[in-house]
Amino acid sequence: MKHKVLACIMAYYPGEMFGDICHSIADNVTYLLVIDNSPDSSLAVQPIVLPENAGMVYNKNNGAVSGALNIALALARRDGYDYLQLFDQDTEPQMNITSALIETLVVNPDVVLVAPRFINLNTKKPGRVMINIRKWRIKNIWPKTDIGLVDVLFAINSASVINLKKLPGDIFYDERLIIDGTDIDFCLTLKQHGLQIRIDTSQCITHGIGNRVDGAGRWSPTNYSAHRKHLGAKNRLMVWRRYFKDFPGFVINDCYIFILDTSRTVLLEKARFKKLWAITTGVVAGMREKNIADRKHNGQLMLLINEITKR
Picture 1: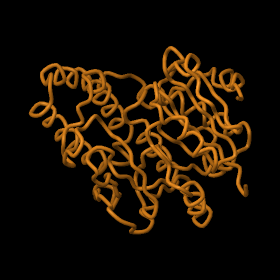
Picture 2: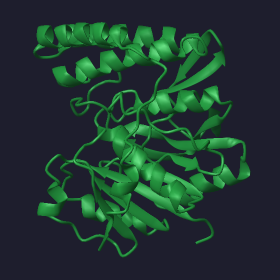
Picture 3: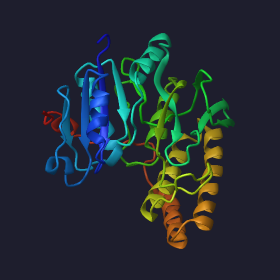
Picture 4: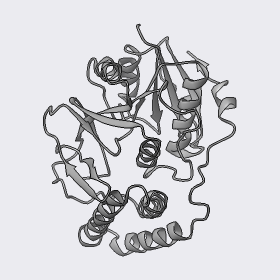
């Protein structure tokens, strides 16, 4: 393999196809890191047969999604990988997507992160891409086909590739955010450092966001639990407060999206009043959060990395 590539896939009680997805990813990278994020280390009880070039970390959901991503970053930096590719457990990679995205980074050396466009797993509609036109102006597009490289504010984690040689060593995922907004916060931090992010629309994945009903429309409700609604609202307020000075257009646009999502929750979802209360308390918690500029990560990352079990 021309480049040294680490792939990371996070598992949280994955389905029966998880082993096949791991093998598919491992065939295209130097090493595959599987992070079992289930609190009871479910893959230790019902282990899967991993590829030869793969290892497992049992993270017990410490730091949730952000914690798992930081483990991957720390391992990639420690062992001198050129690129890090991230996968969610429900994303089945297309053939050659890894090499295609890496080639995009090679021919665009100023880009630190590239991701494919995506189709929502449930709605079958294209996912949203946010373009920063000017400081106070944002444009949302939903690319259905290949329209080339798109300069974006942020990209979803799944299938994205990071050029580790361009990534500053002090940037990591903020474990205060746990899950919702983790990828947005990471990308906006990169943008603050003057680094570039692209969506390569020639590449496409199927990716699930929310618990939408199969065949639902683009603006259908996410149907997240009340707990996720609380976290999402809290994290949004934290991200808004952190980045309003540099990206006011994003914050204003995201406020509109938040109001729209809250309206859909109240009008269309079950347990609407419970969820509305969760959203309200999340907003209050986000406003009260102290030291908003601080970023938290797990100081025990290397201990976990050293416990990787090769199968």
